[in-house]
Amino acid sequence: MATLKIVEGPGEGQVLELGERAVLGRARDSDLQMRDPISSREHAYLYLDDDGYHVKDLGSSNGTLVNGERIDDRLLRSGDRIEIASVVMQFTEEGDERPDRTKPEGADADTPPGQAELEGMGYRVIKGLGREEVARTFLAMQLAMDRPVVVQLIEPEFCDPPDPVLTAIRRASQIEHPAAVAILSAGTAGDRVFMARQPAFGQSTWSQCGKISTGELIEIGCQMAGLLAESHERSVVHGSLRPDRIVRTPKGHIKLLGLGMPPVRVGELSTEPDPQNRPNRIAYMPPERLAGGPANRAGDIYSLGAVFYHLLCGQTPYVGATEAELAPQISTQNVKPLNEVRPETPGRLAELIEKMLARNPAERPPSMLEVAIVFEELRGRATTAGTASPRPVAPVAAPRARPRERRFFDVRTIIIVILGALLLGTVFLLGRVTGERFLRDYSGADRPPVEREAEDEPPPSPDELDPGMPD
Image (cartoon, rainbow, N blue to C red; front, side, top):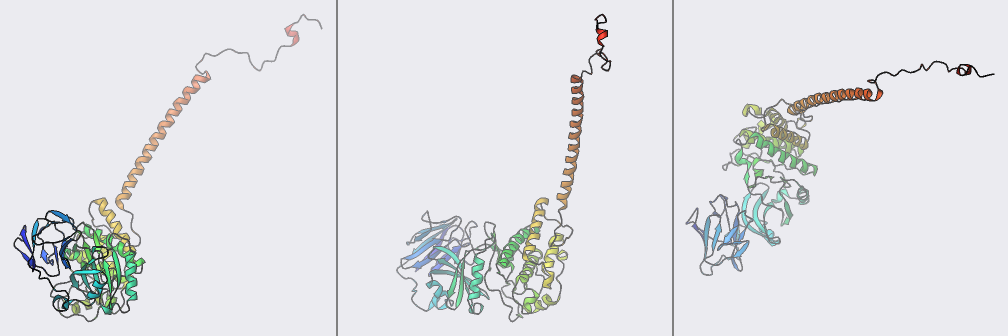
């Protein structure tokens, strides 16, 4: 039997009996949780192969040490000490008893469909990260590249036939945007389609609903609207936007999950509250989706507006304990004005979100690009003013000139005109004085007058010159 025991640091005395694999990290669902804030959420993991137990670092910020030496992947021996931040663990292996991976019973009996095919294609599954309506999600190692990835196995009913799903994933993989999560590979595993993407560990905005500032929301809006505008240009629709899809990484980057995946379907509406208090799948859906329409660009605009409304107000645009209670409100009622729920919201921002939430798709902004343009304008105003503040509303398609910049431009122009007039006056006066002096110096105006013969007197006759000369 192999065990891992915390011998120093937070959680001292905890013991983990090891199976085939175990994840170590700060996340609550880790097999052995590290209670040190500088450890990564998914810091390292232990796995068993033919040689024995290995410990592998998962690209953590502060690294993983074995016996004081920083490692990437290390075969463990009984008595080795593993250090993660201030937590020190001791690995102990007694005898040769190890989990039998050839038996169909035990853990392998619960292997989800498609996982065996996935592992046969070069992925070692570390742990499951949860199951949603569309797919099962796993943390795995891509053996060929020796890197951790998140793999999503799409359920058969969402990938029949598989070609449209694979096409959407390929198009999503071509998007280059800071908020996009890199898609590394895709293919089929049995009767399922899988997508392997870069891990995006961090805190989702679901936990920040009602606590976020308008400045933070404007920044998130710039990232999300910009990314979705680019995805719409590539004919990729998200179709399942919710606050838990938006993640802020430990480095502060905003990422959107689920791009390229099949959209959630409406199906039968639940009449019971979710016991786990998860985001309601229809609370962010547009009315046309509830009526049986397909996911499209206009629907993404509505859903993103619903997410922003929830982030600002701490409640969804329509409130109900169950899906059956929410659906009639979404289909027939107008959303409560955002300024009534959160009065300090800037007027332009409130108008934009309410327009995105219009029940009639024709009354929403014409494209996600228009939404992105308004958010960029709001970010520019917030940067200029130091914080976003309420301003008079203007149409989305024709943003107003910024009053602060216009006033600054007028004052500057007046100053330039005044200085120019003074300069021209000075040049004129200097020129006049200089000219008068020049004329005075070179025209002899100051010299005494000289007597001259009149130029119009006729010349003397020969007789006058010499009157005694004979003819």
